[in-house]
Length: 430
Image 1 (cartoon, helix red, strand yellow):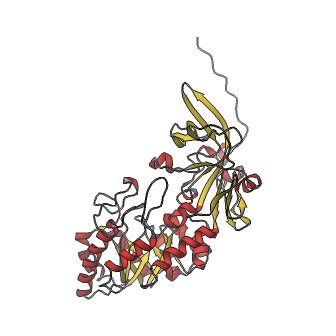
Image 2 (cartoon, rainbow, N blue to C red; image 1 turned 135 degrees about the vertical axis):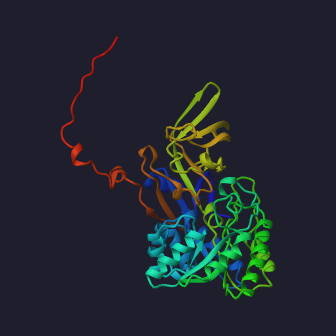
Image 3 (cartoon, rainbow, N blue to C red; image 1 turned 45 degrees about the vertical axis):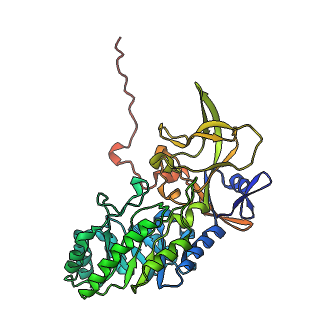
């Protein structure tokens, strides 16, 4: 559920007209519903109320500090994958003891930053990373909390680009080798082996892969405790899907009931890393139609938002429902929705039956709250979009639109290239 709806022929977010925001802030613009974000987090977190747990929102899905702040105020933690995300989480006010650091490529300076901050634990992806964290902790005279990310070789039945729990994926340590990895890690004097971590993929629409993975982790947990390793945390990652088109993912309460039942015979604190399921349907991307055109028998709707703003359709061939901000009575057409980027792969929809958009119309790209702005770029030197948070009948700009001068921030012309440019005339050859 979400709080984007029509009153008459006009789209509203909560008690605020979407067109009013677009007129004031401009387009393209990401618009998020505070009520939806808060409610989604509460539904997920409350579903696990019967067991000790920490809900660590996956910052990679949407890392705006105002969005993170909503979940932190609800008692949540943050799952990070970089030093930059840690910085954001801290600026948003997170308790470092509710931060878990995932990701396959942690740099030494990022590890040191996390250690100095006092995060709960690192989800470790390799033997060499384990050694690097131990060395950093030794230099800083710290004890690093760690969990080894175990790759359970479970098929999540999702898009191959967002599958992370198979043997061929780059993530984690093979489940068969994980026990030996823990025994090796026990010899590291600067590590505290707190937990086991697992994340099998994103946009999962079935519960069974989660339970299959949990069963494998339970066997490992028992073996480690028998060996004298005190495992206190079980990080089951995220990955629960949402409805973009016709998917029917399980409700968080259904997911929680299955996990709690399957884990009834073990005692630990669970960590969950939801991202998309919290923010995906809580946000939209609003664009303005610049032009409409036809080539041969192909129709195009050209808008001012492109793959630099929302890359999911180009990268994953993902579906996002498209709606009019102000409904018209024009007949439907079949068209491609394309952006201004100089790439043939720059599209938001292909061969889609749509309302008859006209120049100047506002278009709402739905379910854009997850992996929208966070994956955006300045390709073609296009300033990144604004972000707006709606709270009832008021809205707040939580990220202003980038200005042209910000595109070259940090760039510098070396002195050797300064001075008057020469005009060179070349002979024309006939």
